[in-house]
Amino acid sequence: MADREERLMAMHPRLYAFFNLETGQMDTSRTGWVQLNDYTYYHETSIDLSGYARDDLSFFPTSVGIQDPGVYTNSQTDPGVTGSVLQVLDIISSVPIADVQTVADLCLAGVAPGMLESVYEFDTFMMGSYRLYTNDNSFQAFAGLQTLHTSQRFDSGEPTAADKLFCYRIIHAFVDPFGTPAEGTLIRAPATRQLIAGVMVEEPELVHMFRLKRSYELANQVRSV
Image 1 (cartoon, one colour):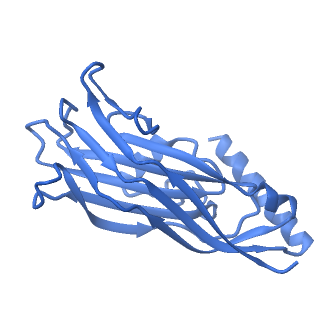
Image 2 (cartoon, helix red, strand yellow; image 1 turned 60 degrees about the vertical axis):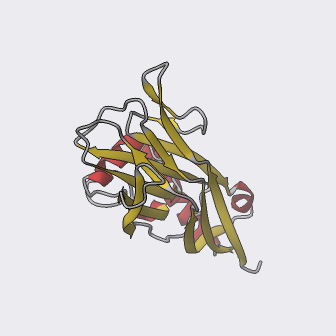
Image 3 (tube, helix red, strand yellow; image 1 turned 45 degrees about the vertical axis):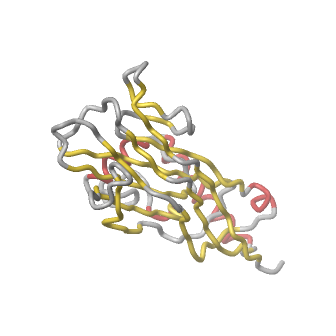
């Protein structure tokens, strides 16, 4: 069988987290994101590769990309707040993330998934993008407008024989000092498309068996965390 070029994608809705006066809490119900606390939000989806797995094909990524047209905002109303940032993680992994909150907290401390002090193996991350957005007061039309400050990658580009890829957007809103969300607090991020291009390859049987074994071991390692 000839190698097959493929372009895989994962879609994530916009984040719209606002302060709900009725509950006194931040609310993401309009867009379906999971809220871990007042500052950490994530959305998860997956890419089904079971059809390729049945044909004993392995996926070799060649390039990744992120499309997120729109603006990021983090408006906090606490009078003690002097600045705000957004930490944005885009991840496509061959194993699920067991603890999203820990991943967000460690990244803020300088430990991305797959690095030292992380419980995740480097080769499981087909895509890993870290971006830091900082407050921009020069454009008053958007309260709490965030502009890109830092962009870094932590993906391995390693091939996989997994039957599913797990896709995440994790957004951590940080304010200095930590402000208490109040009326008028609004955190927004645009709808996003994660793209990963690559080649489906029919490997020699023994090589493919070892790749399947590795995928199984990594998946069970995460479940035991």
